[in-house]
Structures are given as C-alpha cells and as structure tokens.
Length: 60
Image 1 (cartoon, rainbow, N blue to C red):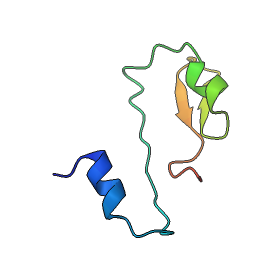
Image 2: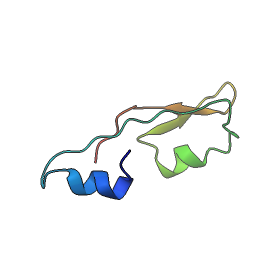
Image 3: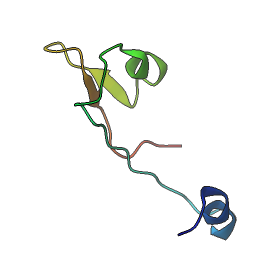
Image 4: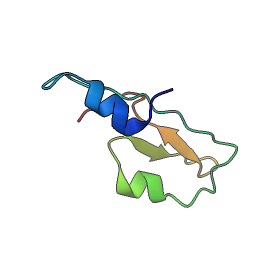
C-alpha cells in the first residue's frame, strides 16, 4: 500500500488526479461546518441537519 506522498510522486507530471468522497451520515454531528467550508461539495439536510454530498467527485 502506498502512502499519499508516494502515490502523488508516482503520478505523471500534468496528469489529472481524482478523488472520490464518501460521507458517513451515522457519524455526522450535524454542525454544518462541511457545508460552510466547501459549499460546492457538501450540503446539509433540511430534515435532520446531517451532511449531504453534492458531488462525489469534486473538481480541482
């Protein structure tokens, strides 16, 4: 298993890298900090206040 630094070094210069996000709503405290800090990526449920993922593959 490669560390993050090693994986980054292995990428070719100029190559596009992607990440996929997942949220664990069972562990969410509902503070809204995710949605405030990264509104293009996260949202907050009006029902229970827990985090929602706006996009699983955010851009750069």
